[in-house]
Image (cartoon, rainbow, N blue to C red):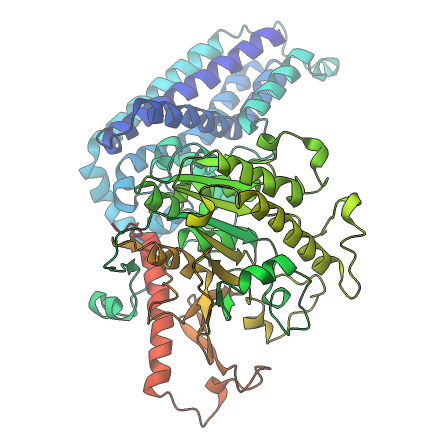
Length: 636
């Protein structure tokens, strides 16, 4: 009997899969048929769409599957079919309705529906009558599909022979191994066999963010937003469009008399480096002789700040130029399918190959998804390195093995290229290879600074190999930390509201003779425009940051707790976008302990200069929120 029940469940899953496939075809025809997708891209989108459809169907119908496999024959004949139909309708029809709604509603918000649609229903209930009238054909189509699916579902159930007796036999409650095996197989297909389960963001590993909506279905995006803490932004209207453009724009363009240089760009994202580790005279200074030698001939940003406090936030700011102030990483957010031109996309337009190196697993921390968003095509991980004996047992391949491997790969690349190298060995627990522990057990240094010294050694090995290449002398090398980290930091204190963002950033151009110090504040989001400026890139592009040589540079934007922060050479201001309220205003130069909130002072007068700073913070908040909500990040 259990074999026949497995066949019934299998047919029901196929029925639902066919319906979701039909809906994706409709979605493609409405929104993507003229998008210029290649046949290969279309296959990838539909393949991952089918995978996500199956995941959705399994999540929605798990209870129905259990009932049909193990309980159906043990329920009263009069009730068994009614229960099955109720479960089928209850769990599937609302989500199918959402998918049908999105065939029209996607036009308005350009993304698959999430939990935010509940607020739309609440706030726009009077308009839904007009919506149904306007899209009457979708309503008829929905009714037809619902009727047809219910008809086929009942036909499938009718193939289930009636039990000879409806008396419950407790001994039969022991499930047959065939049913359990079937459930395990379907679970593995639905979840995926990788380390991470299949999520709405998974297709980003294989296709561009603009095509993510085609690979998704509205049911899975809605369910995911219910079970995860995803940020849904609110439109802000502090300023008119004209005022906003005068206060803050994301359009960047640097005009140069010289033509585009075509230099290679190599970016080292330094895991957990804080500014003090590389700052001469700082008591936190680690032993980094190689980096010290490079910095003697570099453009050093003395007052650089991170835009976030985790790796998956810092990398978004560094490579996409987008403030990472959502609660979740940008590439896991409901806005990840916005059209953008990241650093890789811009440079590919100039003939660059684009590459990302990290000694951890493929798509570690979701970085593979971000690479696709910013236009980086080639991802090299510990799997590509191919020698697990060189793993640290925690994160991946030790830096002194993996960084020279990256240099070897680059030596075989055609130029020009973009290469992003994310080291891992300076991440807690700061593991150093056994054969080098004595070398990097430096008196006066703790485990974290010893790891920094070891990374310095690994970088030297990379450069020793790179210097023998033909591309080395025609390259801009960028060094920037992903975030601040202090292994001894256990208690959050007020000064950390800005000090916790202090990180190193510098640019090294071999044989240029440039040795310069930039004293004004610089943020991670300034990296992309700075590189574009140094390359003499003349066309417009998007960034929330500015070139370090831009006269308007010197303003930092980040988030701590629920407050957006503005920081310049003297002022720290906090603004809560949820409350639309300024929370604090400090002069952190004269008040390093942040003991005197000027907003709480009766004598504080909001001068024109102070008001301009506060307006800038509100303008950037408005630009960020509204750009993400209305898909306005694309600048060409």
